Image (cartoon, rainbow, N blue to C red; front, top):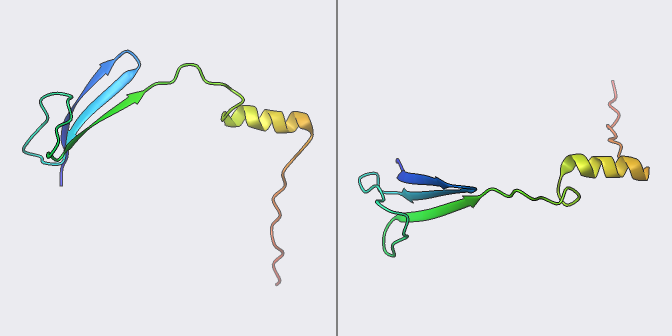
Length: 78
């Protein structure tokens, strides 16, 4: 099974029009009811709050607050 499609880049947006029917490539970026195609738009986020979700900042914050995590490995018998 092969999907076919088209794409466009407009500033910070990447838009795909994809069809599940490999013989009917989409001609535009307007989704049509009753077809086996869809439109997907991805937007690049430029301004991110570094405290909300950045793993590096979260790690730094834990270190500054004095909390640490420790992984314990179960003992094995010989």
